[in-house]
Length: 85
Image (tube, rainbow, N blue to C red; front, side, top):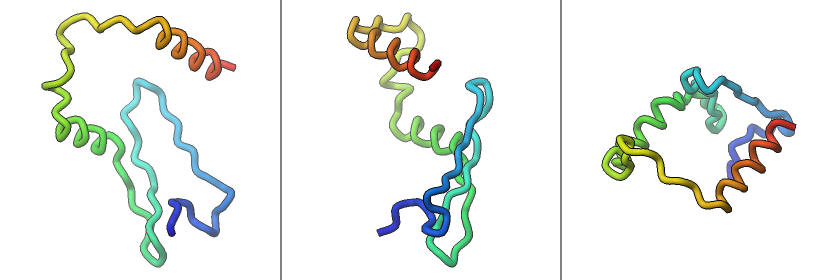
């Protein structure tokens, strides 16, 4: 079974980073040998998933956001604090 990581690169990985204000990047996606890697445009993937799942009909962006539960707020704060460490 192919696990998405090239055997000759293990344990090395590629890490992609971008700022929240930047467009989502294209990433190199490995295929099975002998096929070369392809570029996967993450922005296009997200746009397609959003359109096909019809989130524009399910999510109401015109009103104020619904408040988070205290448990969810606490969880988000813990994640943000861990990232800052």
